Image (cartoon, rainbow, N blue to C red; front, side, top):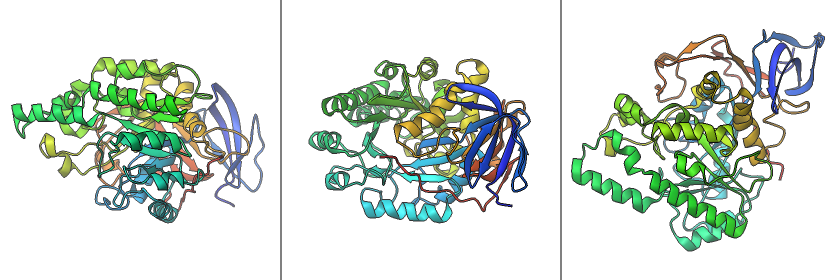
Length: 446
């Protein structure tokens, strides 16, 4: 029997603002029918969902898989396996690899590698630099979800800080612009002041003061101003402050020209956690105060922040164990991202329907992803079955990311990922990964 033909029975489906009990038929890797009391065919397997939550697979529009050039930390194969375990069925990966994906050849090389090894569906951003405007103008809109502009220093030399170049990118881009917004001169001045006081022994607790809220706000305001000037489709990544939330309009993502997202770690951690975790939670932009965490959660609930993603960015523990100035920024997150987000549902701060909207529907809408991100007849069967009755304690031995650690170690989440289907293939079931699963290149309806 085809491995992509299923009848999933007795599920609580969550889709487009509704929760309802139904069966779902998968044929040829697509959702063929959603209905009640569907009868199993001889050609399909039956999967009893036992009343658990059946959601569209998460689309993570912000990951760093370090492939090529930094594969001692992570690679497309290892991190896509972790995605499957976490209910993420599609990812969009950042360009700051070695070499960076700043031209068509480098971009297509990443697609070719993913076609060989990725367990989930995939897409790759083209990166902007101070000198690749011609590559940006020539980009086929179907070839990438967007242009990534680092308006703050990142891994690799991809800071776009020339005002004329920034203006031209916002004016001429053929696809949405996504931005990392932090003001580098402000950060460098803060870092210099910290070194003057502590030398190389800067406490990790200083990270949100060095990568300050003022640096975030200034850069985000600049991106918004450029987008308004040129009518650009702008998406601002990883909002980390209460102040920035106020810069965006609440409401549905449809029709917005300027949107924003936050990440699961900004819903979970706050500055108090540096004392316990130190540079393990060092990331850019920085995790800030508890009041920021609470404001971000509220902004996500009301649709002021549109998308929920990870900014998954692995480093080895040995690298993270360096003193603060030499400890790299970034966390491995994909394997436990959805469970982390669902904690806010159990707390009552977010509804389950809103998490599905922000993590599944909104990325598909924003980037014009073809036939994914929703439970709709005819769409690809990218599905995640969540068990809200089965808690899950996170242990390092279970981490599938190549870095082999997680900032959530020791955490008990109140849900577990029971199953993940990628294009109708049962890729994850009760803690076991099917390594025969392969994803597909995401298509953009542009």
